[in-house]
Image (tube, rainbow, N blue to C red; front, side, top):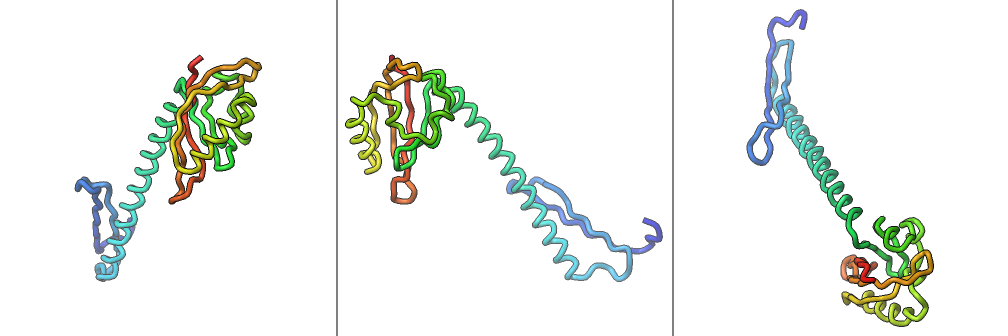
Length: 178
């Protein structure tokens, strides 16, 4: 700060919702005259923006931690979670499906769910899928085809996904009850 002989300093602390100090914005004016009221207003605005940026960064960090805990929960369950669109195409299935059926998630996503059930189950599955699209939750036991060709029994619990008042898909859980 060479040639700093007379000047002004303004400090603007900013706080969280509990009153704890999150940080400080400091303005220095090396020359005369001292700060104006407009300078003070700018300092308050900078402090406000700084506070919001820190809060946003903290919220993002909390969300990422929450997503990681949720991902670990879903990926380490013994039951398979799945999501389908309103046409019956699988949009998500948890990785445990490979242990249960021999199919990797990537082999199932994008396909119609009925491709993995014996033909004899088709009529019942279609009727229950229509009930889901009408807003009803469904539970039941079904025979499912493994990749090896073997059949296994699963308990299914499904419910509709609503977007506004419309059903946009289905989500559920498959449990091996063989």
